[in-house]
Structures are given as C-alpha cells and as structure tokens.
Image (cartoon, rainbow over all chains, first blue to last red; front, side, top):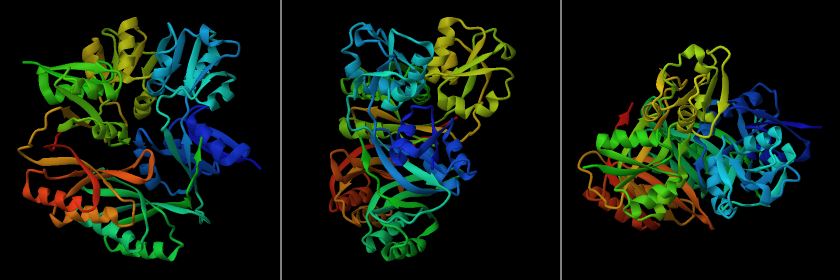
Length: 276
Length: 276
C-alpha cells in the first residue's frame, strides 16, 4: 500500500528527498506551494503524512513551521536529519568542460562557491530554487549549463550528476518533522517537542526548566519566540529526551504546569537518525 | 562625515534599508555577497560598521549570523527592528493595468499572494531576490512587468511604487544587529547579547538561568545551538535587559561562570525601536 506525504517545494526538493528517505519506496509525494499547504493537506486528510523542515545546522530553526505546529491540530510522529549535499547536474551527454553557465539558489551557490571557482570561464546565475534550476535545464534542453541541486532533483528531471558533494562546509544538515493527525507512542529512544508560555517575570523560565531537571530529563533544544500581539509574553519551544507515557516525564509536565500558563505537546516520536 | 556600513545583498535590499534607517543620510552602504563578507569588511576596517539580520518574526533566528558573532572579534553596538513592507514596483509610466508579469523572491510572492490574486491575468515568476527582481526590470526596461520589493529598491533603481504594503501578514519584522570592532557602553535601555556553553547534564541550563533570576535580570530571548563536532555540547544565545557595567549584571555573570564552561559577551547596546 502506498503512503501519501505532502512536502513544500517542487519535485526534487530536499524535503521530497527527506520524505522518500523516511518512508521508502512506498511514499507518494505531493508537492505544495507553501508550508501552510503541507499542514492543510494533512489536516483535511488529503494525505496521510506531511514532512516539513524545522531546523538547519547552518541557518537555524524554521520558526514558521513551529508556529504552524502550535496552530494546527497535528502532531509530530517522527523526525529525520538529512545531510544537505549539493551536486552539479547537467543533461545527459553534457560533459563538465562544456558547462558555461551554472544556475541555482543563492545559498546553494554560496555553499558551493569554492568548487565553482575551479571551473574556468563559467558564469554563475542566481535562481529561485535548487530544484527549479534543475527543472529549467530539463525543460529548456540546455546543453551549455548545469544546476546545483540535490541527487533527488537529478533523478526526477533525468539529469546526470557531474560532481557529487560540491559544498564547502560538510556540516550542513536539515532536521525534518513528520506530521500526522494521529499521535503515536514512541517505542524506543523517545523524544518530545512541546510549547509552553510563562509569565514574563525574571526567573519564570528557570522555574519551568527546573521541573525537567528535578526529574533528570534532559533538554535537547530550547528556543523562545515572542507572541505576536502580546509584547511581554513568550512561547518557548523545547525538545526533551522522554515522552509523557513515562512516569518521570508525566511528573515533569505536572511540575511545569505550576509555572506555565499554557502547555501544548507538539508530538512524541522516536529520535531520528542522520541520513547521508 | 560619512559612515561606511557593509550589508549583505544587492542595493535595495531590506538590509540596506535598515542601514539607512539606523545611520541616516550620512550612511554609505557597501553591498556584500555573503554574511561572512559583511563581518570581514568590519574586521579588516574597510568599513566602520556592518549590519546583519539576526531574527525575523515569521522565519526565526538567522543562526548563521549568531555563529559568525561567536567566531569574529566584533561586537554588537546597536539594534533595529524593521517592518518588512512589500511594494509592487514598475518602471515610471507603467500603470497597474499594463502589468502582465510579476517577479520576486518566492517568500515575498507568498507573503503578497492575496493581493497578487486580485490582479487579473497576471503571471507570477519566482526570482532569486526581491531587490534583484527590481534591478532586472530597470536593466531590461520592461514595460509589461512589476516586481515585489522594498521602497528602498524603488528609490535605488528608479522605479515607481504602484502599491505599498501589499503583504497579507503585517506582523513581518526583521531585527538587525549593528556590528563594530569597538565596543560601546549603552547609556539608556541597555540590552546585552551573550553566548555560553554548559555541560550537557540535566539541570545545567536551569542553573545558568537561575544566575540571572537571582539578580532579577530579565531574559528577552534564548536559543540553543548544537556545537558542530561536539554532539553533547550546546551553545546558548541569550538576550538580557541589562549590561555588564551595571552591578547586578556583573554579579549575574559571576554566577553564570560557576555553571558555564565558556561565556562570550557578543555586545551591549541600547534596545532598538521598531521602524515602520
């Protein structure tokens, strides 16, 4: 049976690669224009799962997706860390020495800058999207150009990989959250993402975090976000290494309730592996 | 006397608008390709100041600039919150009804989607950059097209503003940090950004934050970032509403030193206003 998964971007995007890595060959990927559309597709049961980036090792958290997690009645049921590897792609039969133009998103070009400068006489052109640049090469049948994009884009648009892993900094990972309308109880290596609000008084956050420390629950990530329209209130997004079905986590959440004005568990799931 | 300021992007970028808002007409803005180039220009004294985005209300923190703050011997001496207002721009003499194509960065197009859908028969095209789209209209003299970009881009490329503030969500603000090689002591409304590392044991962060709570110093922002290459260590970026020249802040930093293995003050500055 196939598994339908919504993602943001065009076919060949890193999010699609994450969906295929997580669900394997049974995944049927459904591209969406905006992150909100990914959430809508899951909520309206047009797809069974959604997948969205929540954090990148170079660029930080994707706040918009945390805000959507707070807004939508969906839950995180899995995570995946994908190594972002840029490749130089061209139409079949186009050798590296025939490449005169390279197209890609400015970030991908910047990350591959050191390699691109080794190509003599090549002009670099900024494009709105890595997968979009790959699509353009294929649509226009360009034999003088290459794109910097994912392996997934090569597979989707029938391009050849001229060079693999051309990024200067190899420490580029994106963490993805798998979304569902139905919660799951993680069996192994449980992790929970939750949001809470505190009064904006000195020490209120320290008191909230002490609730976890008392139960020896480890904090894996923390981030504050101002609440729009409430200048003195904050929402904190926290990842912990436990899940509410475990007694210590349940006790920590009871402790947290004494200091937080609002708590929402955004999902419990098994800690994900890194996919290279 | 003029004040030289480096920023990332093309002329007309929101970062350039932030520089001009902060320094006024004496600012001489110097465009840079990458964020790192902005830092380098300040360190090598090619410019007196740099300005970089550190946080956006919709998209979250720009982790790369926090990491560069940690790496470079520079300091934050000011901040500014700029309301991101998208405008529809075209060449002088081109009325709205002649516009058949709209170019911009996908995020700006997404944020202006509701307005753009009210324009009959208009095709939307993704572009790598908002200011870049404005530049292209001017360079190619296109009389059938418009760009979604900043007021600053209109001024720089000699375009007319067909519609101002076309974004659906008005709560789009970017916070910028002003960088210098020389620290300053803020006179009023002091704010300090600092980075610290703790041992990755349950409760270590709670203990660090208690050091501020004991001195009744308020936490304005907190964020954890994994340290690349040290899987169990984290760096925390924190904003507090005080500065080290004040006795309570100095005491809090002494308290913090008992629990943190590393502390770097990234800058003390006067809390910035919102520029609309």
